[in-house]
Image 1: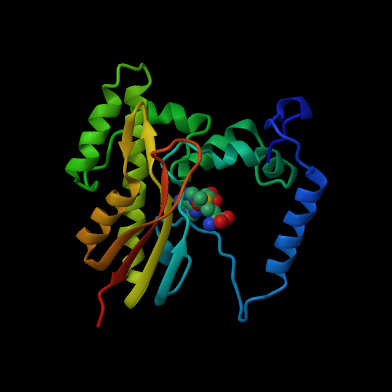
Image 2: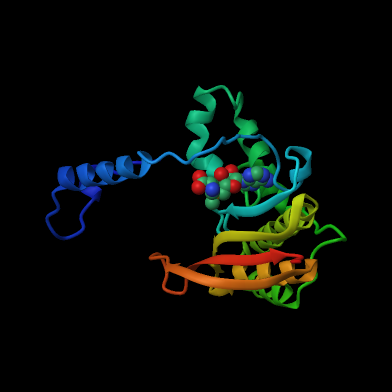
Length: 231
Ligand SMILES: C[S@@+](CC[C@H](N)C(=O)[O-])C[C@H]1O[C@@H](n2cnc3c(N)ncnc32)[C@H](O)[C@@H]1O
């Protein structure tokens, strides 16, 4: 998505980059050589209301949703989106990011400043405690970051809430998601998902740690697993 020049790339020991690249391509090609059987569909829709674009019932949901870490997909992909005609003017990128869960590019950030939680938000003492800490972290951006985190979980709550009508009994969920930190406050996204799923009546909920992320030591990626009304 973005490239650094040679001078910025110093990992302190000699690496045969051509060899590494060839091996990586070989690995990708060998994985791509086995095609899954069946048909796949790409649908354009908002995951906060799946029933609008897909017809259930589904017995398996495997996804990697956005993380609550201010990663902006539109920031990275804007050039291609303009070239391909999906975005026409500068404002479009921010408008699209406002509809994305965890989006915070351009106008999306300024809207967060005045944004208020809807009345039907997910009530969690753990989330409220984390939001208070982020807002009062003594940083001038604390309040807007707390709004960012609150909106992220409100959107995920809408998603889980409206996902249930398209789930078959016994359906299995797998959400691959990482936790985050804001000014030293750990936001345990996986545990908050688990709380939401439990509140909706899912069972067999587990947060399985699958790997450490190398950016900060407390950051871990989880597979959040749950089952919808078994039997
Ligand atoms: C962590 S990425 C995973 C992408 C995909 N699973 C993959 O491996 O390429 C999260 C994705 O969710 C998308 N997304 C964010 N908000 C969404 C929404 N409201 N409805 C549908 N997709 C959304 C983002 O654009 C991003 O592509």
